[in-house]
Image 1 (tube, rainbow, N blue to C red):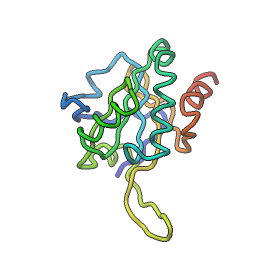
Image 2 (image 1 turned 60 degrees about the horizontal axis):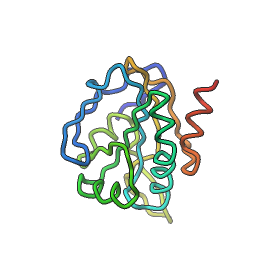
Image 3 (image 1 turned 120 degrees about the vertical axis):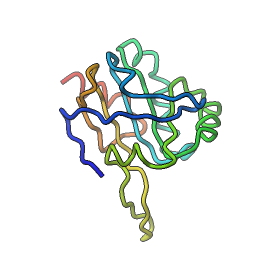
Image 4 (image 1 turned 135 degrees about the vertical axis):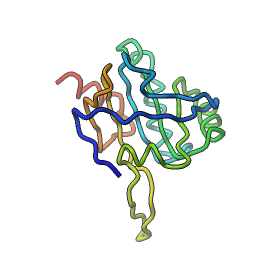
Length: 154
């Protein structure tokens, strides 16, 4: 597992979106990307975060961003999540955990004394040249968009 830092080139992603379309991060060069990793579709925290991006999606796209969510859920799970919450952005299926490993967000977690592997909620802001501008490791689900705006305002 790699450890990524601000200033690093974002690892290329090759994955299927919720419709089975192949998405390559390298094909999005020239666009600013909000790449957010979340543990599971339709869980309370993940739903809150996704809906925050949904509610601010128009402003984010006006600011030139493309929003892409990544979890280890399947395409079918993403389809249901998108339909249930009217999400306007792409969700990538990472069932083999390649992307979460490439981005260093597949970590050991501890819940109620039980240890398991899972996705650390993390947001990467990637510039038009594919360089990581910011990494948010302590995501505020309810204010995920505002966290990004605050970083960019500095």
